[in-house]
Length: 113
Image (cartoon, rainbow, N blue to C red; front, top):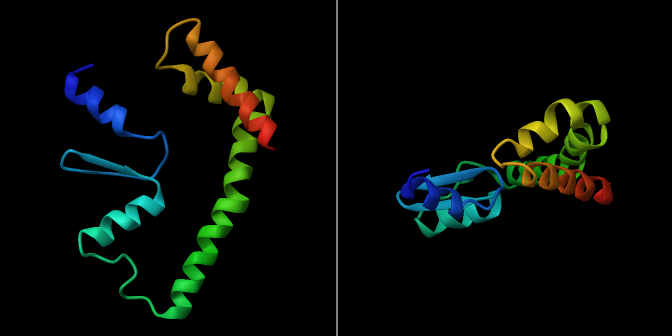
């Protein structure tokens, strides 16, 4: 991996969405919104108060309902975890770290459910 690629990867917190601007990487929704505000832009300028409230409600719905459902399907369903999630999650790592990290991720998700 090149030095630039290593620097890029080291800046990502492992969370999406992320934005790469120049030599900066900002990840997750809250920090991205703050970053754009600091640059003098607003992501919700064209929205009225009702639309802003609806947007926040939809974001909470996704975070509180859909994210746990996705995590459940990925890591708690044994066939999906065995065939898809663990191989994809562990692919960047060599043995035995690939197995350790994949099982640790699966255990963490199941513990939170």
